[in-house]
Length: 175
Image (tube, rainbow, N blue to C red; front, side):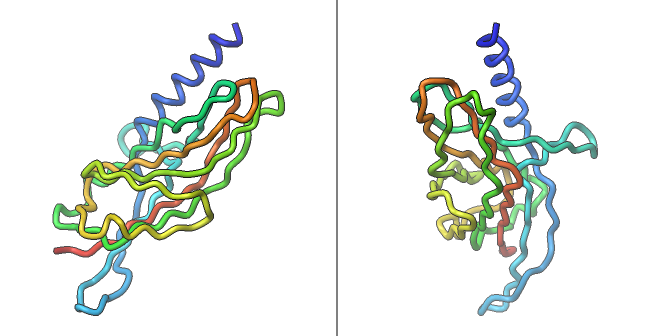
């Protein structure tokens, strides 16, 4: 019974995390050396659209069986409302709070995260509080971006870890 409940919960978390969209605010940030305006868009990776203009918060969760490792389902951030001529300067990630599941579960160590651009390019980074990623320079900013966490279950029992309040900022120019 517990395994069936756990499997249903894991399936629900995966479905919800695949539907994630973003809330963002567009604002001019600074001028670069060429006189172009650099804009920034910040999203909370926990914010999901539930239809229309309604949103609710969910937490990106990684659940693994004993001694397994793998990626979370990921949060899909929809930036399709950005202008089609928006081009990435850099991406900044402020990793949120990592918290373990219940004390009866095995612990999961989280070692890295990944960001996938609308073009399908994926960049992996070691977990630290804030990172700036320059690898997407020149890529289109508009479209779907995906954020995932990677971890390893260090015990024999199933375990989970939650990553909440992650902020992703895309700095871009209009070409």
